[in-house]
Amino acid sequence: MRATASAELRRALTLLPSFALVVGGMIGTGVYLRSALMAQQVGSAPLVLAAWAAAGVLSMAGALTYAELAARFPQTGGEYVFLREAFGPRTAFLYGWTRTIVGAASQAAVAVAFATFLSSLTPGLIPWKPAVASAAVILLTTLNCFGVVVGGRAQTVLTAAKVVAVCGLFAGALIFAPEVSLDGLVAEASGRTEAQGTMASFGAAMLGALWAFAGWANLPMAAGEVVSPGRTLPRAIVGGAATVTAIYLAVNATYFLVLPFDDVATANSVAYADAPSVGARAAQAFLGREATTVLLVAFAVSAFGTLNSMLLTTARIGFAMARDGWLPAAIGSASAATNAPIIALVGLGALTLVFAVVGSLDRLATSATLGYWVFHTACGVGLFLLRRRPGAGDAPFKVPGFPFVPGLFVTCGAVLVATSLWTSPVEARWVLSLLIAGVPASYLFRRTVV
Image (tube, rainbow, N blue to C red; front, side, top):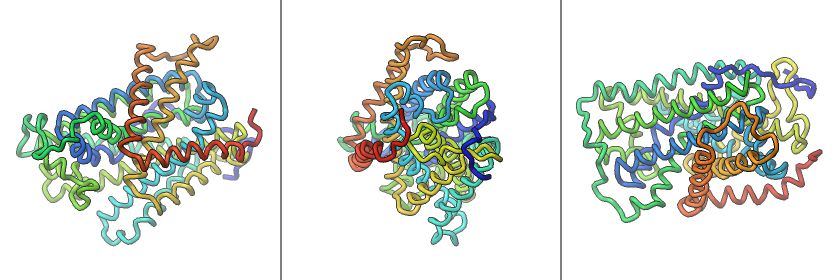
């Protein structure tokens, strides 16, 4: 697997593994965990479900926007390419710099979650959680060094397992739980605060839901390895986002059908660190003591599959940056044997290991989500600019409902980022610092950019 500049990435991802990368990148642990914090923030079941629905609508608008961008520019790098074409190379560098770092932080959060679930299944691993998280990163980085076909096949299997697990949770709860009540869908917290129900609290809850939706933007990063990209990319991105939105709404409605609202709100979160997760409590309604083991296995598989999708796709950003001259040429090389960007993969894996050892799970997740949405919003604006250029009418896929769909995406994204500056000031300062640091870094890293 010697890296050489003469080798190229090859188009080998068909529709099924592409779809699996989208769905597998989206369905992680968030659907089992985030509803507890969201319930605390908004104080009622309808508002929790509304936050999930709003996040789903926004993600679908983003998926449609990115489907057109990816169809127009089916090149390795995804958002990096979109921003380069719309705003120029230096803006693209700021994206690549920030997104690679927050991407590694997000991957570390998932790796730490995987280690947490696995150590709960095997208590002897508890003192070794950082080592377990690191081992997962090293294993999947190595796997993806054998090529996108191997990584894509692994993702298809892992995605199928996690979809079966999450669908089994809500189906089992609805069919076998001793009590299923529609009253739970309109329930409120027993003691609401003045902050609950405000736009700021709803925005914070929506940001939590968007963490669980984050993977819809991953596939375009590997667009240069997708077969028939003009057809495959829109189908996989939009179809994957729609599938996950439906699953998430069904699962969260199930939580409130089988559990009292306060049981959801007091599930595992920062405020209730020792409590079972909301997913575990819902499973206990029909599995009893076996629920914990079953859910921990599902959590571990979900986290592992998400980590694989993230590592496979995010490494392509550094690869694209190196090809444009922003990073050392070796990072933009591919293996002659497997056509994989091995040096980019290993570099990203190493950065992820650093965050996995030193980072805080909740802050990593929030910082990563905020960092993603700064550039998601910029890409939405970029589509409007690109549409006005000569020849813009020629595209294999166009957003239906233009300009309203991408307009909704850009507007909501801007509001979400602005709200996050108020509700998550520490994480916002961290992301802002990265962006500012990216300006001098662009001069330091510049090699042959034109």
